[in-house]
Image (cartoon, rainbow, N blue to C red; front, side):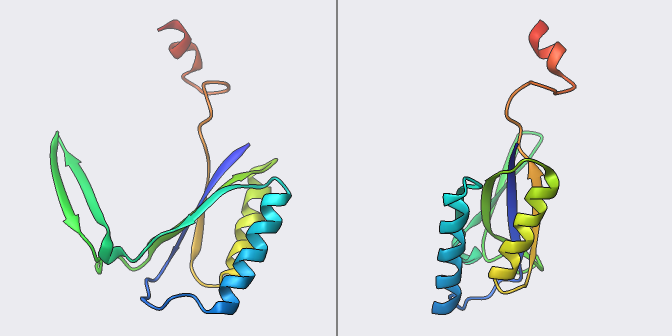
Length: 125
C-alpha cells in the first residue's frame, strides 16, 4: 500500500545543521534500500512560495511568507508499506531523525478504483 507522509513544523529560516543532514541522508538511504521510501523532498522557505485559491472559479494568489500559519509543510515522503500502522511507524522514525519536532500526516494514496466505494459507478460510466 502506498502512503504519503506530509511533514509540518514551525518555519525557521535556519538551514539544517551538517549532522542533521548526515543523519537524514543515512536514514533515506536505508529506507530506499529497504524498498519503503519511494520518493521524498523538502520545501524551500514559504517566502518563496505562493498559495493559489479557487472560489467558484475565481482565483486568488497569495505570495509567501505564510506567517498566519503556525506550522507549514516543509517536506513529504512517498512510502510503500504493508499497513497504515507500518506507515505510522516510519513517520515516527522520520520525526526522530528530523530532530523530534513537528508532525507527519500519514495518508493512504489513491492508486486506482480497486476497493473504492465508487468503483462500480466508475466502471459503469
